[in-house]
Image 1: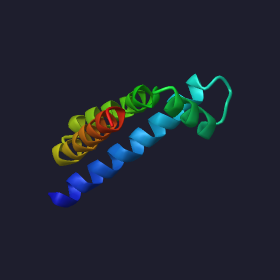
Image 2: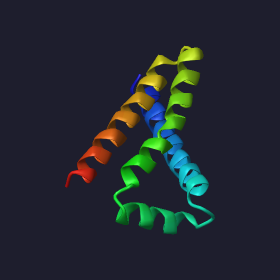
Image 3: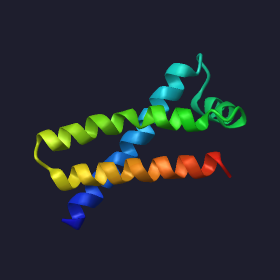
Length: 93
C-alpha cells in the first residue's frame, strides 16, 4: 500500500514538473525555460505557472481512478496538495 502511494506521489511530482515545463514553454513567447521561470519569479507569476503545471496531475489522477489503482491516485492527490501548499507558502513569504 505505501509503495503504491509513493509511486503515485512520484508520478504526481513528475507530471507537475512536465506540466510546468510545458506551461512555461507555451507561455514563454519563445524564451527558454530558465528565462521564463526567472521572469515569472520576478513578476510574482510563478504560483500561477506552477498551478497550470498541475493540470497534468488531473490527467494522471483520472487514469489511476479509471484503472482502479486507488492508492496511486491517492499519491497523485497528495503530490498535488503538497505542491499547492508550497506554492501558497512561497507566495506569502
